Length: 334
Ligand SMILES: C[S@@+](CC[C@H](N)C(=O)[O-])C[C@H]1O[C@@H](n2cnc3c(N)ncnc32)[C@H](O)[C@@H]1O
Picture 1 (cartoon, rainbow, N blue to C red):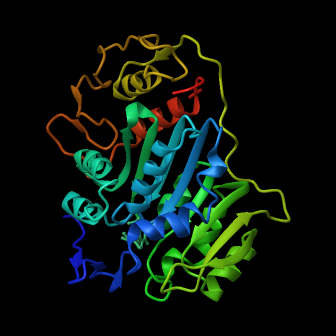
Picture 2: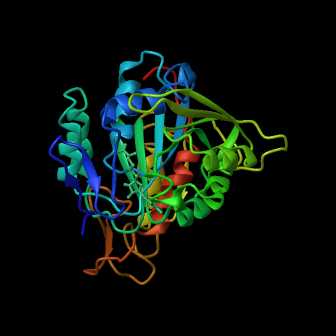
Picture 3: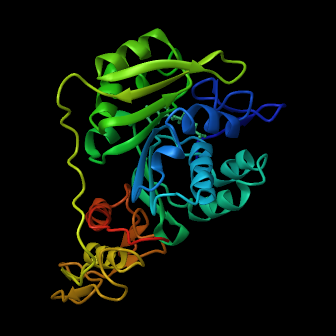
């Protein structure tokens, strides 16, 4: 069941679960641009970079994602690849995503594409792909702390957006913010609309240099921070980049096929059509048990074994996609 959203008379979306609004009354797009994009120095920070990874806590109605995607599309200096990873325990219905974006005509075509892929969001990791694979959305459907514990991406920007800290302390407590810091490299910029003293103090403890910046009415301030700890951050290692080449994916089960498909997309480490699947005893698309595996249009998160519907999104597929992503080498231009 999708998470219910209550729409107030002035068009503001509200969460009955948290008794809080999804975005400022000034409007979601203005907030996304002022607080999150500007707070992280975007789009200037990604100019000329090969790829840019954003980590968000709380996908909600997806406005931050849509605004970021729109900024990426609009920017001639955009990175070849934008990877937006967002953590969300309670996904809303596609109709609510569309209703939320409807107030912003420039976002509507993007919202339509997002809604078209917004299916089967079981607990687990889902990868949605747009712009021929140049914009990826990884949606981790589970509690923020569980998701952060298991993820190993390295973020270039972080958007903290998880309802009011008073109403939803779990999104802001030390444990969560420490886990966020583990996904940062030195220089990762973080933005949020709250300037709550407790949140600022926790961020400083975690190694962020924190600054209060001009807010968006009705808020006087918002918060921008840079990860610059006094110690050597451990974090995830930088992804290995390899020159475009031919490769063989050993194992032609569903995960192998997914990795080959990902690698074979335009602009990936392998030239189109190059990945070869080294055969599987039972033949491509068959697991060792000889059961037929079927993948729906979007393999990660929509795979089924036999007729049974999984209770969680299958992890091996996500791992295969992640491995293929790490081998991603953007070529010049788009
Ligand atoms: C303010 S909304 C996010 C708005 C969103 N960034 C946007 O652009 O529309 C906060 C989101 O955090 C999610 N959330 C709250 N607590 C969570 C938790 N413990 N784990 C994961 N998600 C959580 C809520 O379900 C909600 O969708």
